[in-house]
Image (tube, rainbow, N blue to C red; front, side, top):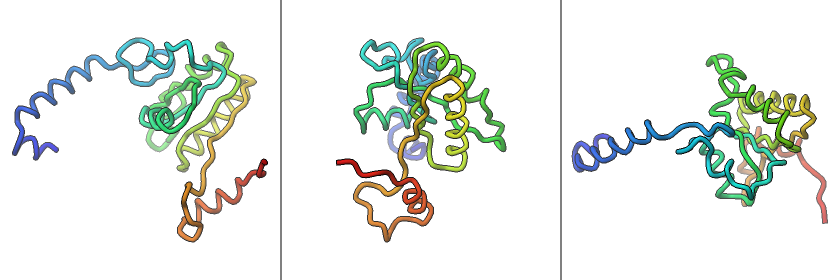
Amino acid sequence: MAYHLLERDRDGGRRLARQLGAAMDGIVHCAQCRDFSESERCPICASATRDGALLCVVESPADRLAIEQATGYRGLYFVLQGRLSPLDGIGPRELGLEQLAARLADTGVQELIIATNPTVEGEATAHYLAQLARQHKVRPSRIAHGVPLGGELEYIDRGTLSHAFGSRSEVND
């Protein structure tokens, strides 16, 4: 992108630089969910129409956006801004888990929906979050992982297929 702007659109590059500067100065973390926001509380946390009994934990703002765009979820969020990774120096403090624990203790959350990625670090984070939820008498749940809609079993990797098979559930009418 930098080469394109330098070669063909220097004015566009200058406009982009100004906009990025404004974003760096004006975008903060929501005080409640840690997502990016232009104000102290993001529009989702400030909404009176969201269900405060449901709290979905995601790794990144992009994950939160994907859930908002793809589902009818009407609860609230908590954005970790990462995942547990001791080798990289990312522990519970860096992910705001003290803030999450306080929220679980004080806000009437009944279910913690854990929507971390199915990576080694994401699974470790999910396990930690489930324990944290149970400590606060909140029911933890995990989003499903496995065979994608429209996927064919012969083309699914072994790890995904094994996880999907092991996590199978009863078929309801």
